[in-house]
Structure formats: structure tokens, C-alpha cells
Length: 156
Image (cartoon, rainbow, N blue to C red):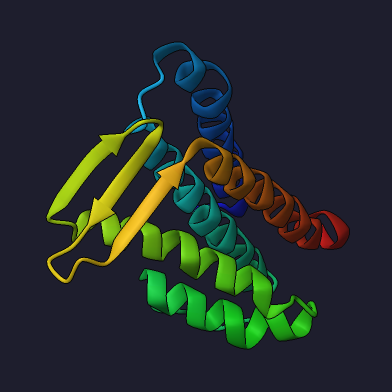
């Protein structure tokens, strides 16, 4: 898929997450929506990485890569991060968002308590989603996506 299309899709995912946080959540006050926000953020981040990888492939800067989340991250880490001096905090952030989704996917118990969405697994590992934390995650995702897309802007 063309990198510009992927770029557009990433921005759209962030817009959906922003709408959920800014408009939908205040109206319905349903903490389960916070998982949808995290899903959209995660998809936006993966689409951003894929767009940059496709851009680099178009320039013949990187070889074909494994089209899995792990394969993309590995190629991004090895070739793009070093070339463009991208800090490891970006990759850590992407992995942290993804880990939250994995925790949700593998959870055995989920419930709402006050304004929080609580996710727990069989080993009682608990992850709590709160609107303020999700807003911070969204804000950080927007900054990272904007920063990463500068790679395409400056070199196109």
C-alpha cells in the first residue's frame, strides 16, 4: 500500500481516538470506551511505522521486511531509527500501548469501577484505564506521529 494512504489512515485513527475522548466519552461516561481509544492509538502508531517503512522501501533504503507487527518494528528499529536518530522512547511507547491491548485481549476479568476500566488476568495482574491517562497517551501518540511523519515531509 502506498505510504501516503497509510499516512492518511494513521491520521484518521488519531482523529477517531480524539473524537472518542473529546466528544463521546464526556457524553456517555462509559469507561469501556477507553479500550477503543487505545485500539485506535495503537493502530495509528502501527500505520505510521508502516507508512515510514514503505516510504523508505520506495527510496530503496530498506529491503523487504516481514509484514507482521514484530517484523515491522524490527526493521524500523534497525534501519529507520538509526538513520533518522529516533530515540528509543518512541519504540517503548509503541510497545507499551500494544502491551495494554494484549493485556485486555488476554484478560479474564474486566469491570468498571467509578470512572475507571479495570482489566485483570488469571495471575491478578491489573491494568487500569482512566480518562486522564488515556488523554495523555493520545497526546503523546499525536506528538510521536507528527514527529515521525517529518521524515516523509523533509525527504519527499
